[in-house]
Image (cartoon, rainbow, N blue to C red; front, side, top):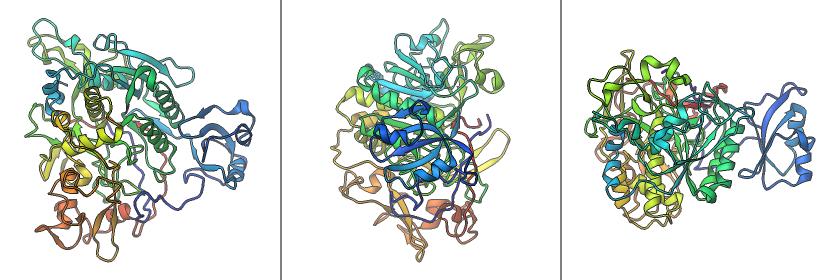
Length: 565
């Protein structure tokens, strides 16, 4: 399946942690040249707007949607109205209603999910909101698809694309359809007891828009106590256009986290992108660029349950994030050729990509003829994301008092630091890729659910993903965070414990021209085979903004299905 999301690199100069860029109240991808042009926008206020403040947007009946989570509204405005609103002190930010597109047995074994089922942990009673293309009421989810709603005007909650059902299966499929006569494998989700709340935001072609995702997040927060929604899964994303402090999508996921919901989102599938000589670095998508969420990259299990031969999938997007330079992804999980639920043989993904994704019955019933009508496979960070969402549900079932911050901290601290320092991959078209398991590729490491469930360390600090900062004089790149706020400075939550000794040395130095820990800083963070730094400043400038200022490239939101190997 071809990559369908383009990542925007803005070339903005490095900023201090979480400071955001110094921009006005109007997003950079809104053209103000024609005062009479009508723009579909999301308007955010600094506090809950009054009726009088909403009237400034036009007649009340023309406001399409009011969002509680972000103090915002979805409305059509002329450019002249947008310009006038810039002077209103109550207006926080105005952005376009951006478009988005829809981008297990081996998978569960790789992250040790099967080890915890015997202890009775299945995610039972925990609600996971799947904000996607809808979820079909298939047998593997019987009795646990507790709520469905379409946020798309004029469309029902059914899954005609096939992406959302596949994602829901990775989270919580019971494996029932694979338990047939002669079966040798069971395709069970990570949390086979979890309840699924389906909020449809993508159409039959996987296309959607910010406004509907914002509405879905609002709905999940509103239904939190009704269905015990403790996790939101966002296997979708779009390019970054501004700092996470301004982006309404990022502000909405932060509101969900602050409401007590763990938000798990995809890193993106642009790890192979070398358009500007960046070798896939700086390609994380929104809202995965937000420090509050758990951003997930994808690994390739190479068809075995052991992680000894696993590598990061070459398409998995890498940090640091554009504009804010946040360290992402937070961790990685299996995402390549993942077998999960098929909503129907007639869904778009099954018909348009049938040669790639159909699962032969012989995969789990030796000697059987034909293809399965219950399962198919997909690859991408979209598939890795629900593995982590399922893990979060298991942790919350064991200890319902865990906050989103505690869940993120436990998953990152206990992630296995076992991936190779250097990795190679060959894509389906024969192209070879060589890359390295540094902090911007694997984050804190490989998800290990069993280790996370065993961990009872006290968590007294915030698990916000830190930013990185480059010293223009020395070339040194360091983690930037207040030690009293992010991770703390104790032995338990020290930097090397979270990200591993191989990428962190001394006073949080992760990249530089000097030797660090006996290893040259340049090669450790970027890889010897990556053309970077002194050899050419092209890619370096894209990430750090030393000399380039690339124009914004409009693109849709995408579910994160990557190319197969």
